[in-house]
Length: 254
Ligand code: BV8
Image 1 (cartoon, rainbow, N blue to C red):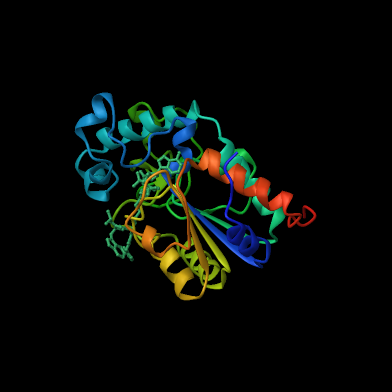
Image 2 (tube, helix red, strand yellow):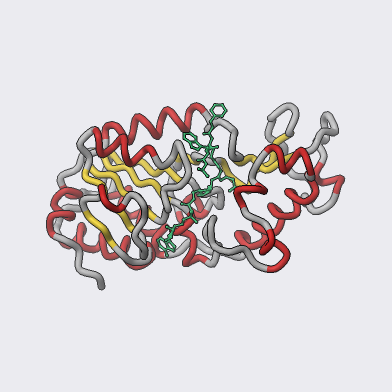
């Protein structure tokens, strides 16, 4: 079991408000490729940033749908890992805990996290590309009929935020407010390349929060973290919650 720095545990134990921002790295141990991992097979020739755009969808909706169907397939086979489960425990220890995720895989909710702020939407939901209303998928979105709005016939699309699209207002405002009031800000499994999500840690730090980065590799923002937990989230987060509990700091579960 990894040994946690005493100072980190003290800060966490004394924190009223803690915000965790997760990126695709927390789902890596569930077998879901990270957003910038080299893609495999047919998708090896494409960069996610080029496919996750309104322009790509307008140009070739079938191709973009096939990419999302492939990713939905990977996610359907995935299970939440120890990192996801540790954040459920952490939320029970700290009443003022907020979970913001950049991920669209829904694994936090499947692990039992509630009130998850989905900064970039959720690949499991589908909406009309014209009316933006959510659509219950009556048939799998693997053929043309399943990819058309039953009301207006326009293309359906996954309910995710593409590059160049605005973050949903409620998610943006709630996440920014949480970052600004945080005593501790955990950045977990993200390369901090995507904005405005990456600015949350900067906001928290500017407001006096202690920033903790959980990542097996250094990132462009490691320099302003107070603590670097250089390892997989599935190892580091359970060690962190165990140390917090051992310190007797865990409050009675809510
Ligand atoms: C917007 C959904 C404006 C789709 C995604 C400055 C300010 C504002 C915007 C911009 C700006 N500069 C540039 C922009 C534009 C753009 C942007 O950020 N571009 C980047 C490429 C420079 N931002 C936008 O377009 C955003 N919108 O700003 O709108 C606006 C306002 C009003 C009106 C109109 C428009 C929207 C961005 C949302 C994009 N959508 N996802 C989909 O998934 O298909 S983003 C995508 O990247 C994923 O959601 C992913 O979560 C996210 C971040 O990537 P990471 O999670 O960090 O993944 P990555 O692979 O990079 O890193 C993984 C990390 O995990 C690594 O560090 C690795 O070491 C680590 N790791 C690996 N294994 C483990 C691990 N860590 C822990 N444990 C392990 N086991």
